[in-house]
Image (tube, rainbow, N blue to C red; front, side):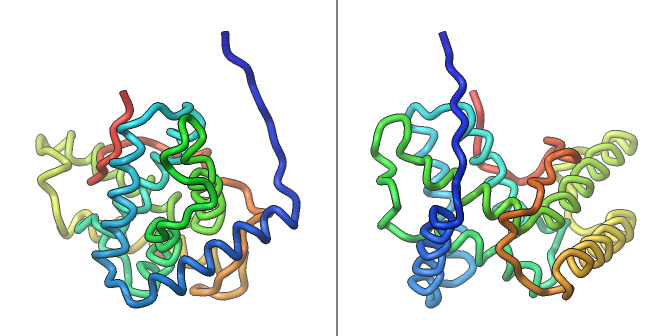
Length: 206
């Protein structure tokens, strides 16, 4: 038997998570991009060692996508866009979670909430990356090559530039500046275009 639970975070609840994220960013300011990504990778590895609900797994897959966006040689984000993603990943470098990760079943609930907020913040980045991965997999299959063997190629670069330009335009439309920031709390999660084509991810769902 399974049950469905729905809960709503009000402005005060969201402010609590926003403050936690800001503390984590300040604590991680001295870390390199590689160290920040490694923190998030370690958290995903720890999550795969314990039992977690499916709705948390779904969010952890999206965190895996954020990590892949930074690591993917073919995607090769412009530096300012890369910093936006790294800023979201900084929370996972903080050892003082809102809920300790070793708590059975719900230990990663706060991480899932933070990922959800980051997904809303980075919805255009994630949508563009999803489209890129789908295009790469489709074209690689048509050309008889493995997507995992591809780095930067001319035919991929053209599509990449189109998608990054679209990403900037949509972000500017929503937030008023191509490299601006927003809490993103009221934005849609943007999962309509979500696909799971190949990407250099580390999180595996059994």
